[in-house]
Amino acid sequence: MGSFYYSQFFYDRYLDGFSISSASGSDTLTISAGVCADSTNTVMMRGGALVKTLSSPWTAGNNNAGGFVSSSASTWYHIFAILKTADQTVDYGFDSSLTAANIVSGYQYYRRIGSFLTNGSNIITPYFGYGDLFLWYNPIIDVNGVTNFGTSAVTRTLSVPTGVRVQAIYTGRIRNPTSGDVCYVSSMDQDDLAANYSVLAMGGIAAGAALAGNVGPYTVLTNTSQQIRTRCTQGDINTNLYIQTNGWYDFRGKDNQ
Image 1 (cartoon, rainbow, N blue to C red):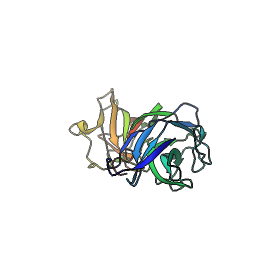
Image 2: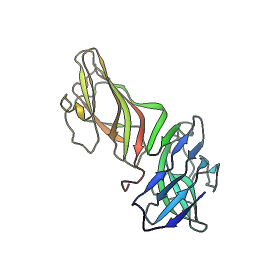
Image 3: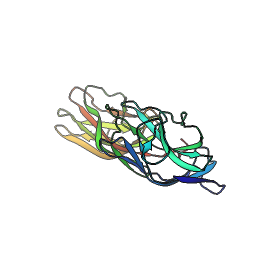
Image 4: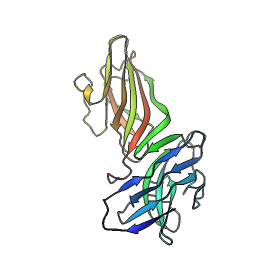
């Protein structure tokens, strides 16, 4: 299942490997081998490839339960590499807590290596990861043709992990058949700028009259509540705005989250 070792010679917040995926209709997470510093930068953990199931209570080993807590429908959970100090083995589990507050007895060190979302049937929403990149098998439409929202900033919530900042990957579409429209898509950390063609280069969607404008895939940094901002030049009853979330880049603690 892996091992750990103390070292003064590793990069702070180091993480390599630990790609994660879950197939359609599955209640299992497939986690590849990897190496990382724990959340306190005290030890390095080397974990092997394992499959963990959505069920609980947590049980060590391959094809066994991964839940520190019982799962609920339509809920985000965080996946951790964990170290058992008694025998120096590394395993994996998931928790609703960002700090692995419900970690199982005997495991002292941990590192968040990803997150997943359950659907309305309490099954893992299928996705696949390649390192820090995570993509939905079926992209999720989070803004579906909304109209009449005006020209002020509107906060939008995307289908990306909660509790951490990620770089959301989205595709956008806007249509206003009467006068055209421009929509500026930005991080909540950026200035709240009025939408116009001069700021479009910073990330936005534009459409001329009677045309539908599309941009993407594009990226935008979320806040820890999965939110971004949009502002449009019209945003009236004739405007139809769509934002589809394709996936996200997860820094996985490398930025000290």
